[in-house]
Image (cartoon, rainbow, N blue to C red; front, side):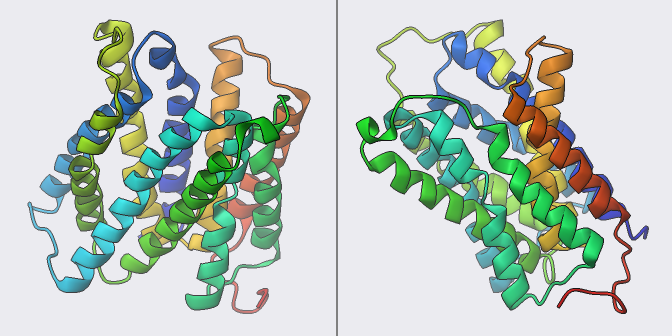
Length: 298
């Protein structure tokens, strides 16, 4: 298999998540609650889940380790989504997302310490630039954070930790479990948690069940699900220490580019700087040779 196949999967994730990020707010602005967006996302996970199961001849690994890792990965990801909704209710998005965006630091640290992953000088330079770029995509002016209390910060840090740990276990699980089985358990856990956001939803207000509400949400969230599937396989064939910053910097990069090209949104100077750093980071990571035995940062 092509040694760079992980890069194809990672870039597909950045493209689909970039498009998801560019259009995800539209149905919510049209009156479709964010809690129901989670429910739609969980249901759209079924589509790529069935596709990958068909490719695997409907076989799912069900040994103890595969089930444990699969459910852990799923609950960390889906649970983080639910906590994010709560954080956004009590705190400002312009402060919450920069915190969450540095979750690759957790993944990189765990992969460096426990998986003994290393990369060369080009890869390390790309990782550093990607980590520097991540918060720049969400920096915006706002009021003093003191007025929002402390709950939003605690929830944001929990989401950061959950998604960083999820990526680490996604890589770890791929050592013994096939990607289709991992995604199957992610799909199942997403569906299991649907009652929670349903209970969080205020059904007394008008909800847009129309084309620009429910159905637009479904179209956008299927991109999210496809990106999640490709991310599983990016971790399967690539190093977590490289995949994590590339995907997490590349997705907002694509969101900014799509917003500029299609939606006519001009990014701020900080986002332009983030775009520049992310492009350079992606190039450096892609150019890093697979065999780094002779010139590796250890």
